[in-house]
Length: 256
Image (cartoon, rainbow, N blue to C red; front, side, top):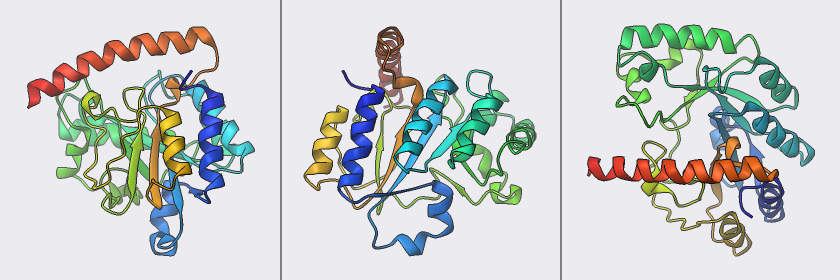
């Protein structure tokens, strides 16, 4: 079975065996030049749903001596103050998984107000310095478009995970679509990169790691709600994601 916590441990172990160093996105962006010749992984987790799943992964990483970045939405399905503080207490970075323009139906003025309020709410628990857009696949608005009118650096934000990474130098892997080659299912979780990483399963990713086929520097994005050891939650996510994938596939076809 793929997308279990035990499989996630194997992924971490494979990366560590090959000498990859795990860093947070904040750490990377604040010290980019110092990592030029290192094998690094920016491990990013987009907490769209089920924040308790995020804590389970954070705890595993902590036991492996790994620090990573967790992006929380402000909606009730993601935002959980207790979980956020528990994850931060393990040494992980917390960031804002913003979708304000979608929540505010494309109104830039309302969106930036919503962004300010959401950032303030999250900063009660952690001094947020990086952000990452939530794809909001059902919305016609791209959350990143709010930055055509405003500048996130005016709010003490040093970087946005899609806008401030040179993906011509850093490989990108994401479990969007509950697979590792789900570009056809993704609405906005896409980057412009020369690297072709045709890895469908986590075992495929591990095999590429073992054969030194992955780039020296990586950003890996997971969605914690996908990763379960218990059979019923695992099956529920498997079925729901397959349905979502077909819907997203049709949306992408209409855009072509």
